[in-house]
Image (tube, rainbow, N blue to C red):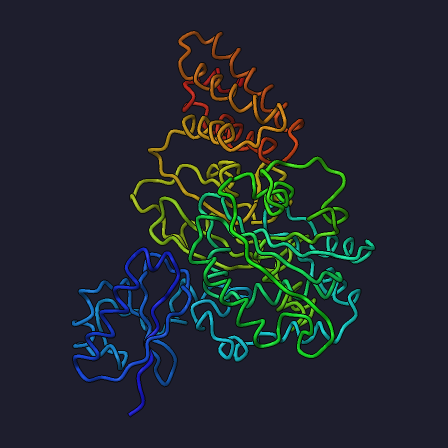
Length: 522
């Protein structure tokens, strides 16, 4: 009788919840019972409220059990886990779990399915098809495919990916670079980490295609210092890809070169800004550069450089493999394709949801997230990281679309969504946004460095003022300060800090101690 295959995630979120101990308990219990099993450490499916999620392979697909604790293992085996037997922790066929079945997984199609470091697994699930297609094209043709797909940067700025690539292609230089911004520091975000830990070859393939498209022969993945598991997995994946001929001086015998290194970040939030990242990668302090010149003209070591985030690069292999039209058919308006949305905060079912642009926040919060974990009404939702706006219920039916969000002073950003129930103090969160900026600012420009410090002081005065006239004066001062930061900061660190502050003030004035008349005047 052949061994039964069990899948236990190696994702760091699952490991933090005990996945290693569960895998060990399964191995020990099966050995004690004389049962032959193969335990595959796959990536996470992104259903974090069910982690550790154990799956058993059957003739009709995988059956899911979770959340499994080490103490549950004997009972699960007694109930017939290895045959997909019934148990209170059983959720039936994994692919039919509603949370997964309703998604449109393009980037994350392999996530939780394959062994992250198995080249054969990756190739069996459409891996390297995009790279092989790219090798048959001229660089300009690759760029055109990406342009026609409508792919925009998934790191937050939403700049058309192919425009950067075309600029680097058309800029003469003896050396060009491809840099991946994997310094994922936004609150409530983890899609980059999941990709590097759960499907690293996808990122490698996307970066190699970018190299072929631009003439760059060297790439770097700049990984957040708080992601040791991602760093180890990426380093090993790069070694394996190089040994198999997918990286190096002669990719798949094509005569075209591209190689890759993983570098650990400096632990600074501002190093997520592309020019500060380049400074750090060069071994210098992470300080924002003035632009122009743009990195596509003079980036890493002064050379033309493509710099995109993990999900931007990870979207490219599928575009080359299936064609631009396939990808462009998902989404709405100028927001094409899908976005890996990360649900976090006060929700019953936090996790990764990949859907085409156009889904509403209300659908995400309730149909996927299941409402608040506390059982209290959701009051505010921050979209786009610590510098994203707080969105009130009146905006929850907007389509998730870059332009629709920009029209109301909000940002989609990296797709992180953090929910807060009605016990939250929005004035306190607005103060924290200013304080966060003061702590994390690189210090180069005055609006960010000084404005954030003054912002904390002004919010404290608003909250502490007993006289309505004093409060009104300080509210006016806060708005002026935000305007200066918004339009005068060198980068998005200071330029976006006003988003959470102003949205909190505009939509939740009572949290600042303003009565109805003051709120109307504010």
